[in-house]
Length: 355
Image 1 (cartoon, rainbow, N blue to C red):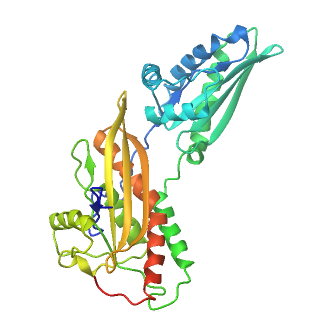
Image 2 (image 1 turned 45 degrees about the vertical axis):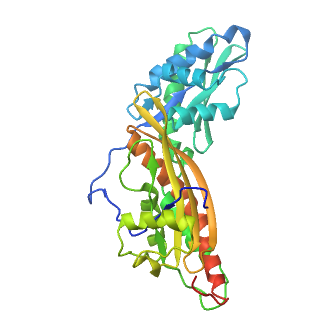
Image 3 (image 1 turned 60 degrees about the horizontal axis):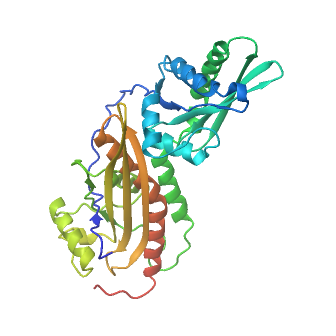
């Protein structure tokens, strides 16, 4: 803990940028990347790229789809030494999807059977690895274009019908809150703190390759903690004082909290870092890493610890960076907070003295 520059997070921050009541956001198009199709027969070897090119062109006409350009994919393949043809592994394919910022990959196989040609396409959710498959077929003696056209309609329909299943669940905050509540409800700790929720203090000082205003991970932790029923300490001290205390506290746990902040029972301490990952056309992908520790303010004991690395893609670097850190907070909170609460309750069964 003393070797790293860690951050403190103050759950007393106010969530900004709310969408006005009744205002609906326009649905964003799904970001997809079409990879070369495999062809097992010698006579069909050239079809793989041709089918992918035609399928990309047809899907690009759909208003609900945004395609990653083939040139951008080839650049990423070259830069990261990936081989996505032939016997490429699914791990390589998903890696390319994440690097390109795509939400879905479209890939598949072409093969003739008797006098027919079959094209099987798989629509893969990049974050979930879930798959939906569609098939198009036609006479082997006819042109390939009509079969690919039929395939494009089926791929588009599959995305419209099954996107919610293939994408990560959109109610991650709600899931995190319920997971925390369920985990705490199962706690059978007895003693003076049985059933008591500790007062939380969290303070965030995130770093990014470019300045990013307002701590994204702290905002998510604030929302989750409050929705889960926790009392959040609104420290009388300024953010600057809390940040300075954070640095000193992590070097010396005897350092006293600023005025007002010492009314908390648990403080979440961690490091938040986001960096630019890749640029693919108009899309920017950032990587975020969040490390958190829950510390008992009274004893200085670490109650729980966790770390998470996530990626997010958007049209701007700032939003992508903040979204990546938000996602990390959503994933860490359901495990970190209940574990800290249970440990804190158990500590109430022994005599404690202020340090």
